[in-house]
Structures are given as C-alpha cells and as structure tokens.
Image (tube, rainbow, N blue to C red):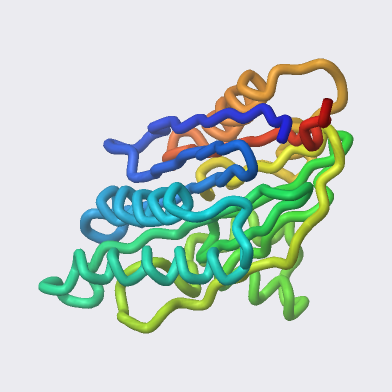
Length: 252
C-alpha cells in the first residue's frame, strides 16, 4: 500500500484544544481518526481522548486487512460510545462528556467511512470533491428537506446543533457507515472536525487534493490556516487528517 499522510490540529480562538486525531498505518491497512470533544459539555477533551484510544487500540489489535470493515467500524464506535458514557456515569445527562467523530479505514484499494455528528470525511479527486459525508445536524435535515440551501446553512443560527454524538445517553447513537469506496491513484481522503470545514466551501476543501506535484502536509496546513482566517475571531479547534492514495505495492 503506497500512501502519503499528514495531520494538523490548531487551537484556534479557543482556550484549549478538545480535538484528538491520529493516522495509524500498517502494511495492509490504514486508519484515519478524528474526535471532536464538544466544548459545551464537561470534559470534551477527555471524551475525545477516550474515543480515539478505543478505536486506535481495536485497529492495532485486529488482523489485517479487516475481514468485515463495516462491522469493525460499527463495533469500534459503539465501544467508544460506551467508554465515553462511562466517563459521565456520575454526572447529570445534560453535562456528560460528548464528542463527534469521523473514522476512515483504508485497505484493499478502497475506503470505508464512519461518522457520528458533524465531523466529516471527504474524498478528493483531481482537485474536486468526489464524495463527502453528510452531517448528523439540524441544518443538514433542513437541506435534505429543501427548506434551506447549502449556502444558507453556512450562517444558519442552528448550524452548530448536532443530532447525535458519542457519549451522553446510553443507547448507541445513529452512525453512518459506507460501503467500500474505490480509490484511484492520486485520490486524497480528508477526515476533519467542523472547525476545519466550517466557513469553507467544497471547492476550498478540494485544494487539499489539487493536481500536481505538491506536499500533502503543506496543503493540509494551508487549509487549516484558511479555515482559521475565515472563522476569526471565533475560530474553533481546527483538526484534520489527510491521506493520499498512490496504489497498491507492486510485486517484484
């Protein structure tokens, strides 16, 4: 598996960084993980840290390539949810630790996506967004119902209200898990918190995979700076992981 990968996480205009992210790479698979601790709840950073560790550890202990990718993603996020719920067992429900998340598993020439809340995953090809996840948010419901446009959602007063998250109540939250999405050489995958995509268009996000001989880590850093600038002076923690797919290893 021939890949290039990068990670960025910036504080923004917040007092602490409650995002956590990682890219875990093995010979036969890679895992991109982003958890965004919800700042309106206690211990958002601890929720993100706990969720990240659960998913990372399960991947590192799994036989690769993973036999049932969708089942693995469901199990991993369910386990992460249970662990974060346990953090707040002695706290009133409204104040329990919570987080949103995006997880992307790459193996055997394709990617499998899972997310909860408004952390996103993008697939960029030739400088254009080929696919992106759809948020579990109030404004996304309005978009799907035709009540507002994508542009109107950018400054909608309820744009930060998510419909589901990791932690809080005990039942496993709704999660979106995709079938295999084939990858072509040069494709870039981006998993990120809402601090990175908020205030930017899909065209802006697609610059992470602009054609040409470019550095993925530098592109991701520039995208982060663009997001921080667009959202100043109220920018959120801005976190993303990126992976460029170059193809499978050639056998000698």
